[in-house]
Image (cartoon, rainbow, N blue to C red; front, side, top):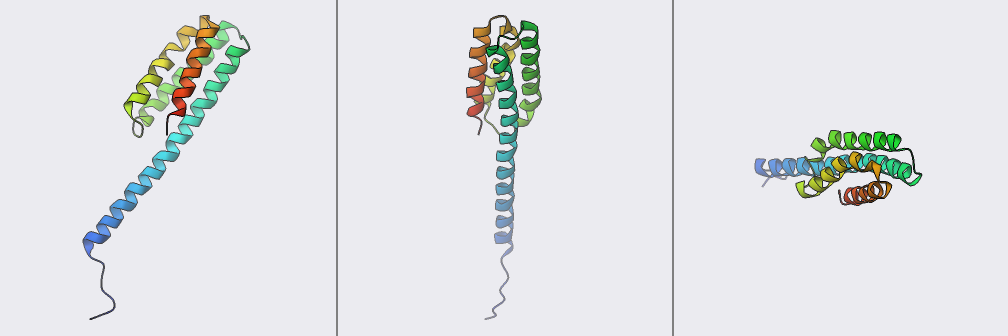
Length: 121
């Protein structure tokens, strides 16, 4: 028997597929994490404006910017995150600009949005 046996093709294919899947999982994890942090930073900014009792126009503009950021990130997040979590966040993001007239309502919505972002993993 020879000491230089070749690895069967099916073993090499399985190892290649498994490596590819692992690579995609790691990439997906870091991609979601980066997008989540970007959204959390923007959410914290809008929340700070709400807590400082910023003028409604400024608060509305910041809330619209957060909502627009969410809309840009959503299609990319759909590749990696379940739809249930994203649906709740989408509803919350859509309500944000309309809630700016009531500071307490916008704070509550931002806190709920931030909590939803925490569930993105």
